[in-house]
Amino acid sequence: MLFADQVGIRSDQVTGRTWGAKGCTSIVRRSGNRFSVNAMSAISPKGRMHFMVFTETFEADVMCRFLNRLAGPFDRKVHLVVDGHSAHRSRKVRAWPADHPGRIELRFLPSYSPELNPDELVNADPKRSLPMHSRARDQAQLAAGTRRFFHRRQGQPHIVRGYCGGRHYILEWNSASFGSIAA
Image 1 (cartoon, rainbow, N blue to C red):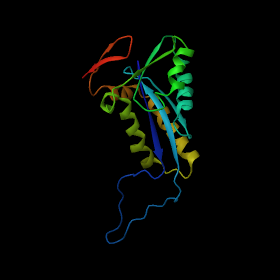
Image 2: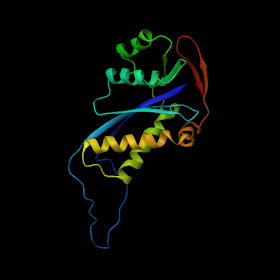
Image 3: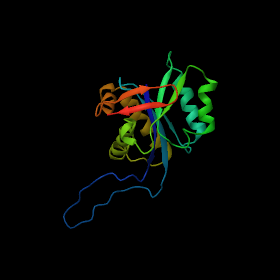
Image 4: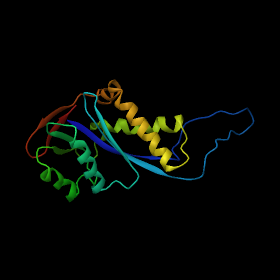
């Protein structure tokens, strides 16, 4: 079972505080350009992480590309838990499991329940750490920094397990949909 979500990372992300000499305004040098990248990630309670960084808008085609990448390393069916984003519920994405039987089954979280998806914590992590460690000058640098962040997290399964460790979820499956989620 994997929990998945997408995140947008912008060049003008608020980075926190700085300091300056008393009576002098501190200056943080940066270009005036605004650019962004997006990432799709999926995590397991056992500490595995899969991701994809992309520059285009998150739509059904991107989600299908992520599903293709995700289906590769597994020899068993993957239950992928996603939120109600319109790309996840699109006709094209709903048809993907039927075209690839036995690979991935999509499970949808109830509406307005981000607290049930531990991958939401993954989304906050790069937004917090990327701007503080490096200031990207263009979209390519931001994408490279985002990839480095996710590669680093892949090698830290104890942190990935920690995203899932806050609350324990009991999942009851039925053939039609996500049965119930109890905390």
